[in-house]
Image (cartoon, rainbow, N blue to C red; front, side, top):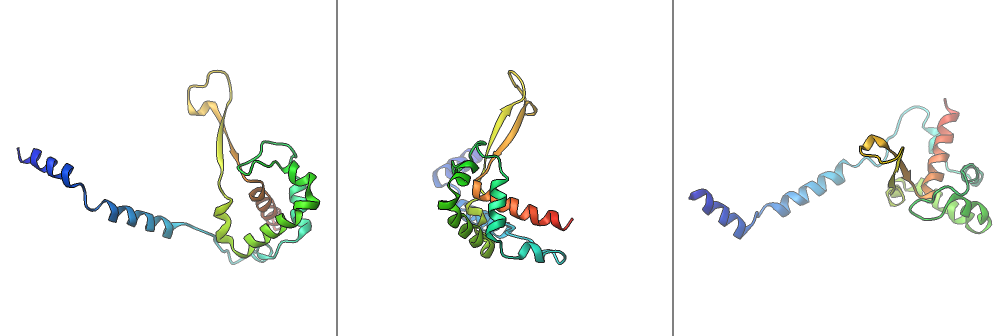
Amino acid sequence: MWFQRSRVKWLADGDCNIKYYHLETINRRKKNVIVMLKEDQDIDELDQQVINDEIKRSLFDMKSWKVPGLDEFPAGFYQKSWDIVGKNVFEFVKCIGKQPNQIGEVNKNDICLIPKGENPTIVMSFRPVSLCNTNYKVISKVLVGRSLRNI
């Protein structure tokens, strides 16, 4: 009987601490986000400002008309209209280099599951493909290219 009364009271009044714990969880998640890591050795080359040729080379190394990412523009669009959009791409990459915490704005991906065979029934029957923003791919290729030079 007392148990039922407590349940009725809880349903009527609700849980008063929900908002508090929700805010605590949000704050903890924000605090636990790793924006960037610094390593003591061989970081100088990764930290250098990017140059236009590096960005252009990274973009033109991509396959032109593969599936576009969230920005819905394949690399071929940027390659064909480089004279028009090249300056904007360069400014964007330079801005991310100065403020790396802004990378979250473009680091949004869709994951598409492609079936490996007919009638897939389990998760292992799919091949995950990540659809990235083209600008994010350019930044990644520049950093990977710099890292490979040190190996």
